[in-house]
Length: 192
Image 1: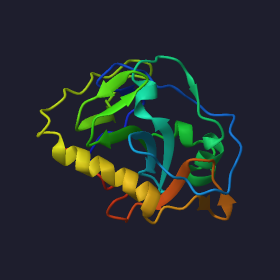
Image 2 (image 1 turned 60 degrees about the vertical axis):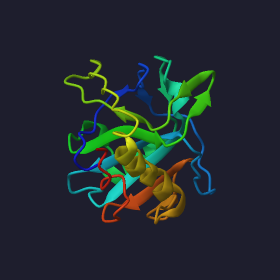
Image 3 (image 1 turned 180 degrees about the horizontal axis):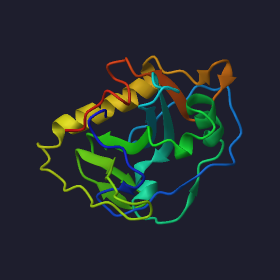
C-alpha cells in the first residue's frame, strides 16, 4: 500500500463512514486470525519512530461497515499505537493509516451481497471530517489484480511474519505488527 495515500475516512462500494475512538478492549495472548473478507486498518510511519513497523488491526467483516455511519470504539489499540509510534502518534503527520480488504468470491453479510472481486479501500480526504470521493468500481476482471494484492494483506496477517507482541508487550486482540521490509507487508501492497 506504499503508493496508495492513506486516509482518515473509509469509503466503500456502499457508503459508510468509520471514525476511530480508542479506549476499551482488554489485551489477549492469543494470536490474531483473520476470516475471509475481514476489514483491516493498517498503520505505517514515514518518520523515525516506528518507521520499520506496520501495525495492522482486523476489525471484522467489511459488510458490518458498509451501511453504517456510527462511531466505532476500537479499544486499547491506542495504547499499542503509542507504544509503536510514540505517545503523540495521532498528531504525527508521518503516521499514515488506511483501511482495506478484498474478496475474490461473492460474500453475503447481513443480507448485503458483495460481488466477486470486491474491494473495500479508504479514499483520500482533504480535511478531517470531510468524506473523500468514493473509488469507482472497475470491471470484475479489472479488479482481479488489486483483489489478489488485497488478499496478500489477509495472508500476511494469518501466515506471515506478523507477531502480536512488540518490545515484550502483548498487543490488543486482533492486531499484529509486521516488518515494512516484508514483501507482503501493509506498506508494500499496491492496490492497482
